Length: 255
Image (cartoon, rainbow, N blue to C red; front, side, top):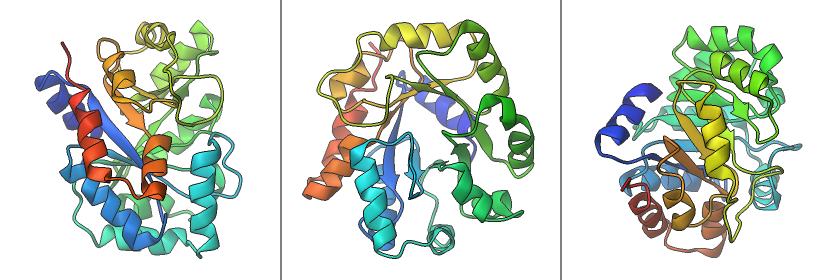
């Protein structure tokens, strides 16, 4: 599955895309795969899967905890990807990983990810200046390398990110790491507007979106929203995961 039809379908329904985040291997590999399926059945348009890594510089304490737990439980990337490949692909899958785990997969990394059903890659520690070669290699097997636009990015940098990214641009909604927040950044609509002027690609907002009202506040500016730490917290607490996804999905409707 590619990303473009997903965004087109959401737009046709007068919605923005809901993209829940699941940490691979948390609390165990089979359970994390089940949560991916649950998210899709509850209305997710795509699912972002985070690969556990020992030095997750963009992740806040909640996702760091989930990654640490997965690694402590013996998580292996290849084992997870093989298990993912054996499952039905319920919706487009986006892999969020850092450079080291990706490089550890070796020269066939992109082919391995494509065989597992990955449609797009988000790599927080991949700078725009070094993305071109990796993006071209991934595109050959049908994977979009998505770049991140930060609130602090200059207009010129936003233009470069917009021209280099594939599939969509990941718009970081806050200065700092991921994490659930009681209040969304009131500047996020303005941040999205700035990025919109730099690219025609779909814009997906992430970092700090943890309430349905946060998503509803950006439906005029964004094409999608990623909800991460709030959902990891829900898994830790044993909340009704599918019901939570449905509540976020209702908020994606444009008025």
